[in-house]
Every structure is written in C-alpha cells, then in structure tokens.
Image (cartoon, rainbow over all chains, first blue to last red):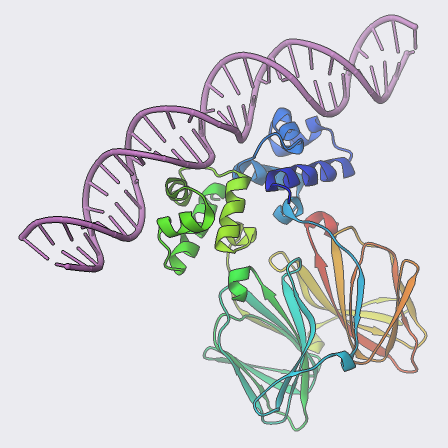
Length: 189
Length: 189
DNA sequence: ACATTTGGTTTATTATATTGTACATAAGCG
DNA sequence: CGCTTATGTACAATATAATAAACCAAATGT
C-alpha cells in the first residue's frame, strides 16, 4: 500500500506527461514552483492542500484524478440474474442492477411499483442524490411537503436527505430506474 | 472566494460536530494531533495531503466531503422538453435528460436506435464509464474486439475509453438509458 | 462546594514544505 | 560539430506544518 503522497506524485507526473508539459510549463500554469512540482512527482515532498488546489485548478483536473486508481471491463447484467428486494407486501420491488461503486459513487436499481402503492423512504444522509428515469407508468414523488408528478418518459433528480415517498397514481404497474449517488461513505451509512 | 484550506477547515468542523466528536475523539480516530485538527478547523494551518488522508480514512469520509460545496432541489424533466441529438440519418436519437453535473460527475440520456442501425462512438478519454439500461429491444455492444448482447431488461457497464459501437439487432426500435460518468474534466474533454 | 474531567487553544520545538537559484545533462538548431 | 536552449534535479534559506505539553474555562461527578 503506497503512501498517498507518492500516489499523488505518480498521478501528477502521468497527467503532466500525457499533456507533453514540462515542469516549467506546469509551474506557469499552476503557480507552484518547478522545484516543488518535481519533488511532488518524485514523492520527495508532501504537498499541502493549498498547493494541490493550485495544481488542480491550474491543470484543470479534478482532485480525484490525483488520488484515484484505475480499472476497466464490461459487465452485462440480465434480468434473470437479479432478485428483487420487496416491500409493501410485494407491491414494491427493487431490482439491484449495479452495486455501489466507490469510483463513481453511485448504485442503480430498476423499481416496480404496483397501482395505488406508496413506498415511503426515510431521508438518507446528507450528500445523497437520486435520479429517477420513468420507464412506464404514472409516478408521484413527495419530498418533504412538496409533491411532483412524472409519467412515462419523465425523469427526476432530487436531494434525498429528506423523507420522500413514491406513489403509483396510475392503473398499471409503474417501472422506473433509479440511480442513487452518495457523496461519501458517511452519506451511505 | 474562500481559500481552500479554510473551506476544508469548515467542512471538517461541520462533519466532526455532526457526529458529536470532540477534537480528542477525532484525534484518536485519525491519528492527527488534537492541536493540528484545531488549527485546520480554524483555518490557521494548511494541511498536507498525508494529514488529509489520515483524516478521511479515520473519519471514513471522502476527500470531496472536505472540498465541496452543497446544494439541493427537485428537478423534473418531461419528454416534451427534450430535443434529441440525431445521427446516422436520424436512426440514432439521443435525448439529454440531465446535463453533466460536476458534483456527481455524470450526465444521462435516453437513446433510441432504429432496427438495423449501428452507432459508432470513438473512444472517450480515460476515466469515462458508461452504464446502459435497456428499456426495450435487442442491443449489441462492441467494445474493441469484443461483442456483448443485451436485451430488454438488461443492463451494461463498461469503461468507454475504447471505440465502441451500439447496434440494434432486433425488429423494433431499441431504447435505452445511458449514464456517462467522467472521472475528471480532462476525461470529459 | 470542591475535585476531576472535558474540550479547545496556546506555546515552544522540531521537521519539513516551498521557493529561488545554481548546476548537469539532454535536446534542438544552424 | 558546436552552441544555445530546455529540462529536471540539487542546494540553501525561509516559512510553516505538526507535535507534545501546558493552559484555561466549562462541564461533570462526588
């Protein structure tokens, strides 16, 4: 397990070289001395948050680009592989499609809600956002004191830190995809 | 515009207090001295990446929890609001649902592909991942030299840094949601 | 009421982050 | 090939990060 400051150094050097920038160029772009950038890349020094901030802003990268690892692949999930979680006596069925991924920080489900069914969700922690893509049916979303409607083809996005409820207001089973984003591990609980 | 080390300090203090932790407790959890945590929270000192690492690991939070801002709301997007991008002479139609969000780092579309249509996508930059939720139809995905099939109800996830193509192998229009995650701004281009 | 603990801040010390400058080597050009 | 420029590293000086210990006020326990 590599110390974080060495990983940062490697990532920084990889990014700089992928852009064919010299240390001089990078120093100009970032306002961090050439000598310091060299030390960081060699893992010889442990930069402060302010220096890193100047680097990410100067190079226009994200902070995570400096601290993350990598990994690829194609994954296919077919319906038969997935067992739903059921609530509301089976009238609410959530099929997990992709589990939480620390890299992207979200997980996804296909949800089915029978006619007239309401599913209540206690507010998640702060930093949780939900995206809803209504595939079929008529849905009513209540967040706090407010109510929103969405039908086939509609999409919704909201911060999920308050109690919210989904309700099927139509005559047929409603079906929607939900992508849940967690800003951090604490948000996920 | 607040210096990053002061923002980090405020975020750290907010998180610590939300968990009813004293500086002593936090020092134990993180292995960073109580005095240093206090300095960081007051914005009196500029922590190095290694100290931040110990903090995020000790408190089990993400780096972004320390550097990000906040914001809420519910957004509903209905089909009439969305104009599709068209390619392949109209046989490929991409309806943008939610634009790229710097916070979650992804954007989402509803894509329609007419029967027999193939849509080629040049590889995105490294750090781009795609999630596909097939709403309807028979889809064939080719990534590099490999081919994968997915039909109604299937989902797919892959790293999108190589040339990839979608093809509708069925008799009806295929329809799928796609969530595109970008690890950083450079990945997005 | 008094003693002890808790929680955050201050102080003094040591280690190291950060810079400007010098240096050695490689690359580019005529 | 020789000369100039570019590039990354080393060095020395200065500022500051990070700690252990001490301090002080408030909270808690007996």
